[in-house]
Length: 118
Image (cartoon, rainbow, N blue to C red; front, top):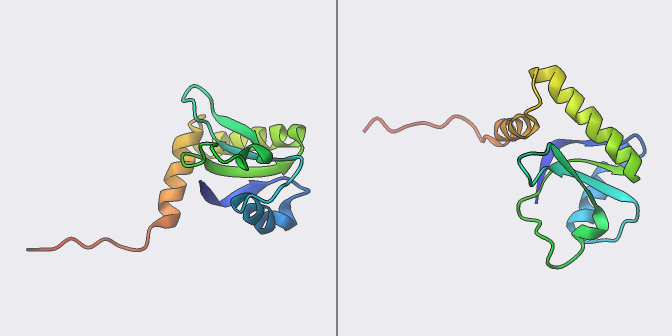
């Protein structure tokens, strides 16, 4: 599971972002917390997954790229809409996947890559 560095959090979760992330990564139970990820289906933009589903042993977590968390399904849907609107305002299109993957690549770069002259 990959987490976007500046992942979105709902109003009730802003102060607890790090704690919620830690609990999700360590399979601690959290009721009514939803994770917003890049969609597993290319035809969709985002997926909203209840955090309790991620606790299941065989849930496919390897391909998940988390961009937000919120408490309550309705709040998570509003946050997903806000994420899509932010991407549209910044890029002028709805290519959410490419936007977040490019931002993630930029954030994880360690520094300049030097090529050998020889």
